[in-house]
Image (cartoon, rainbow, N blue to C red; front, top):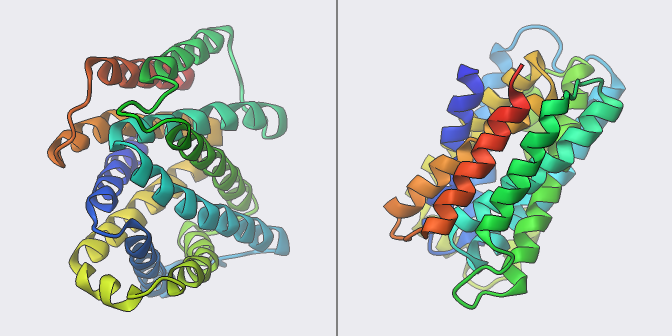
Length: 273
């Protein structure tokens, strides 16, 4: 519980820093590079085999592909709409997709009360609005939902890798190692990439460390419990995201606050034992 709640807070914080950056796509490359460097430094201190068998490696590679797509769509989602709105849709959609797969394929339990909690989450998403507000339109909704799909994908791959015995540090490091070249390939086609990357090095370094800590806490927690449960509890980050959105100058509406509260309440209900 402590690990996943700490992960939720840190995850919302690095997303807020990314939203604040002058060039989100370039900052994403820096964040991934920092993650690879940090996990590389931590890897020699891990105990036991990092990847005990081939399936654990394959699942890690799958998580890396999911992360690569996630960072691409995340940048577009954050450019298209306010942090609080887009973050709520991303995390809510990801959670609703993870639960059915976890129940059907990974043996997690689903009690009758959980159906009520799912309905509460859906009400929260509806409260956030099908339109992004402020004239943002369908594009903002599309990118937020697509990001949620990739969140569900890499979450399930991470869980399967952990179930195969992968170590969280090596697992996350390999996944970031797969995602980083994709981001670099996209960014190198844009003029002035290197200059922009260096220009915001402080923000990307801080966000990268926070991102790495957030995911390592999350993976360690998920190694102890089911993917659906952990993904659900981590969605308390929605409240942190709305709070941080105020800190970066956004003004969440009362409907956004209500939607975030409903999504969080549904998350807690789903996770309740």
